[in-house]
Image (tube, rainbow, N blue to C red; front, top):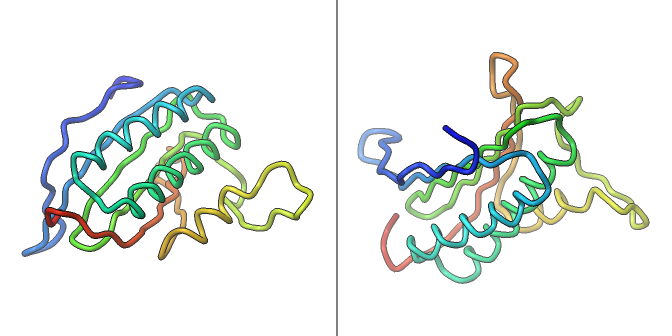
Length: 152
C-alpha cells in the first residue's frame, strides 16, 4: 500500500454470522499527516452515518493515536484501520517503530506532552496495544460504542 493511499472499504467476515465494514489507509509518518488522518476518518464515518458523539470521539482518537505514532516512533509510515462493527467502532493505528514498553498513561499536570492517551482512555470503552509481529512495529487500538442509521 503506497503512503497516502486508501483501500476500498469492504465487508469483512469476523466470525460466523458477524460482518463489519473495514477501511484502511496509510500515510507518511510526518506531522502534517495527522490532519490527513482526521480528514480520511471524518469522510469514512460520514459515509457510515455514525452518531455525532461516536463520530467526533473517533476523529479525536485517530488524531491522538496517529500523533503518538509520528512523535514517539521512528516510522516511515503509519497505517490506520477503522472497523465498524454492529454496536462499536474499532480504531487501530500501526507504526513501524518501537516505543520501549509501548504507550503509557501518566502525564503530569505540567507536562507539555502525554495527555493524548488520557483523552483516548476517557473517550473509549477499551484500548490497548500489542506488537504487530515480525518486528514490524506496534498496534495501538481503541473501541467505542456507536449507533448508526445503518447497522454496520
